[in-house]
Amino acid sequence: MTDLRRRLLSMVDAERDALIDLLSRLVQARSPNPPGDTRAAAAVLTDWLAARNVSYRVVGPDATMPNLLASFQGARPGPHLVLNGHIDTFPAVAASQWTRDPFGGEVADGAIWGTGSSDMKQGTAALVAIYAWLHALHAELGGRLTLTAVSDEERFGPNGARYLLEQHADEVLGDCLLNAEPGAPTTVRFAEKSPLWIAIEVETVGCHGAYPHKSPSATRIAAALIEDLSEIERMDVALPPAVSRALTQGAAEIDRIHLSGAAANMGRVTLNIGTWNGGSLVNMLPGRCTIEVDIRLPWGLHSRDLIAKVEAIVARHPAARMRVLSSQEPAWSDPDHPMVRLIRRNAREVCGLEVRPIPSLAGTDARLWRQRRIAAFTYGTTATNVAMADEHTDIAEWMGVIKIQALSSLDYLMGDTRT
Image 1 (cartoon, rainbow, N blue to C red):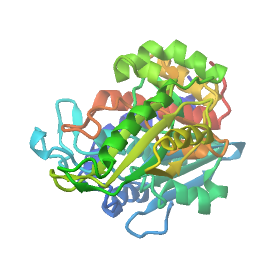
Image 2: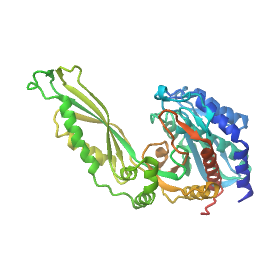
Image 3: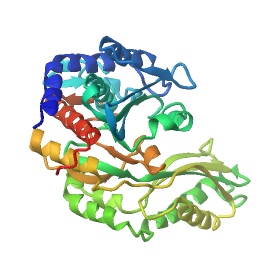
Image 4: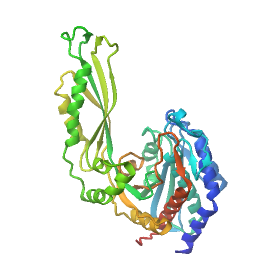
């Protein structure tokens, strides 16, 4: 191991207690989205940077949703690596089911507890710390390192990463992105299924519930339409060969992490009826029903193919109309990219872990870089009780993951391609 790598690991070890305190305070700084106000949480992170004389900027169109942007150039030319995490969290859920304060940031039983402790304040805190440590070593580094700690991620909103890519693209695109969303330290994620959201409205005359011969029922039409929509889950998908190989090789680990069936779902179209709204009284035949549909596209399909298929299904029901709420194209990065190889090597060396490159079921901001043809990867701790009671992050695991993230960032900037 080089002297530079040893020094970086020493920095991590020396600040172990400070890191735990950083994450605890970050959890205490509430930032649920909605409403998405992340000012208190962002201040925790900027205090860390300021205490280490690391410069940064706060940018964004909404003052209540700040984005932290920082960047430095190494001593010689090299690749540009972007670190990305988000500051906002899901709202606290099921308060009565928590055994600890959802916003207490309590350190107990080898873990840090609270809303957002796993998704993803642990990851954002880690990347902010890694940025500060590498900044201290900048005179010995190659390349360029950029930090983006953003708001408005949980709702895929316009005020966070999307804003940075639209307004500060020259600063934040880079050559490669490393995101620290939780998943499992045995996997590095190189792709995400893409959401296609569609609203379908059924409208009929409606009438008194005792006279169903006078009007078709909007809710019964919607129910039949939902059954028809299940056809899209049987669509043939020609996965790109590299994605198919990664799915095959990582299937056992995917199912271990996400439960049986997850690997199969990654390679096919899935359908979720997210909302259903119809009827007003039990004794009235509904004249209106609206459903919102969440379709997840695997790689090898285009959203236009799914939209055309849904349009054809909706057309079988003359009382129904559809509109597209949101459409994105599924993108993927090379599962054998140098960053993936570095994470796999460092995981073996630091923690004795065998890491598999796999796609992801859930969405992250990394997709925005992939859509712009920038290699983007996600590596983080186990996603423990995300959006559930007693969300937490295991401290020992987190410290190992931080070392893997830090060394992989350093190695990438230095052009180290050893496997």
